[in-house]
Length: 399
Image (cartoon, rainbow, N blue to C red; front, side):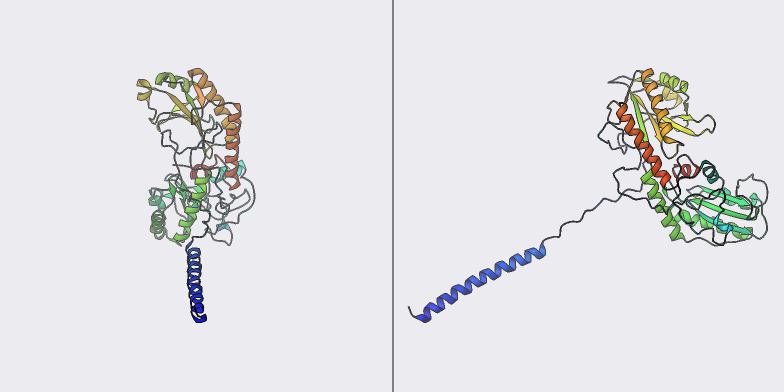
């Protein structure tokens, strides 16, 4: 074999090897390009929709795994959601006036302070004055003072969210809630639309309707009318609703008859009424505060059927649920202690067991953990200036 032939053979072999190596390199390069990047952590969006208290099997409830009944409602203690504290500012103090009393416009959000929950005096005043932080406000200044009858059409408006009207004689006077029978004349009037409740955020259509109602009344007074920015109010409503959904906590304690036992409706009603409960139109028993009449906690059927006078007379149930609505209860921790004792007494009287949502008996350690949860839920509300049981809380956590 000549040198030339040997050279050609070697060159051919090297060429084949080079092609193979090149192809493998290209293949690895393409695979690296096509490979997906490491997935980033994705959290499922939180549902803004609130869940009303329900005892049906489909109720939203998550067991904590330690014998503690789960929260009933939209709260999730494992969420990393940070409430936007600028959504709700501290309510005006005793010496503070609405923004309309100063150079600022009434619809300018007040500065958020790092103060704690309002005092009882401040909380009481929330019910008797407009609350910019949870309401859309439209001020009207009539050319001359007008009576309540001048805004009768607005007083009867049905928009799907609560509407309130306030008036005062002048900037030095206190605001007064206006109803159809409110006496006197008002030099300043403000219409207020609640931005969120347990049915969700005020929609664009509801805000538009509210603006149209006030806009129709303004020329009849006559009064200057400046509508708010609808997009901004819709955004405020949605933010407020998300915040409240995260803070909406209800605690249930179940009294259940063991195995196939049942409680006669007549027996249950007698025991409940002896404990201070009264049957309410909503199909549950309510325990009301002796002085204020506010509902302290409720007693509901463990079954999905509501209680009625007729059903209690004719049927029986296998258990009942004591339910504490944290946001709507003044002093939730103390109220929980009272509810726990009432549940224990009823369980003993009816021969039932006090259990969690998974029908496991509750002991003192479990009760202590539940109490901590109630305290934590109440403090979370106060941190964003919603005092449990206050007028602000009752408005936001109404159905």
